[in-house]
Image (cartoon, rainbow, N blue to C red; front, side, top):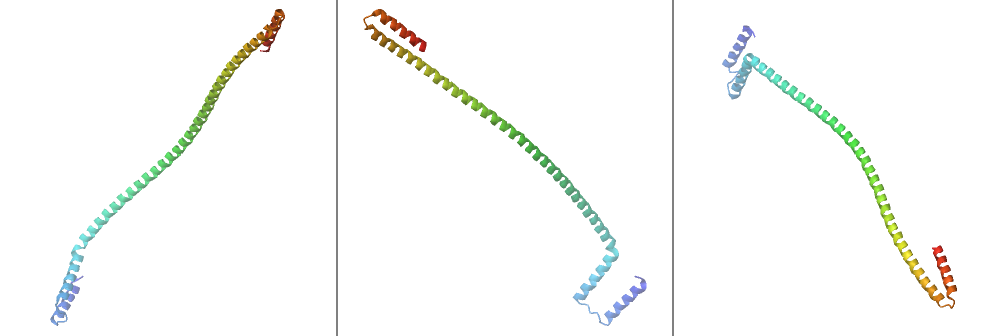
Length: 180
């Protein structure tokens, strides 16, 4: 604004006051004070406000960059953790397959061992049964042969001719021995 314009505005203001076109009441005084405040702020405080807003913008930009970097780091950490988790999951699956094979091999080995031990136990019991049966058979044969021997002796001893009965008895015993 130049001097001519400000002189003209001042003159207009004074004329409006003198002719009572502009009456001073509370609203006019508040409006007048606000206009003076805006004029003073615009002329004297605009550089200070502008520099303060610029410094605040720089600070906000720095905070934005800081949080953006934090977000990028966080995302990179999350991606690396996800990769590690996938790798760990694959390793666990591999270990699971190996353990499953080992367990199936152990089960197969123990089942074969169980079958062998069961067969051995059955064979031992059968051998004991055969041994006891064999012992029983031999005792039975001894008893039958003794009773047969006694029967033959009693039968042939009653006969009159001792030589014939002795010979017949010996032949019978020999025949029984060869049957055994």
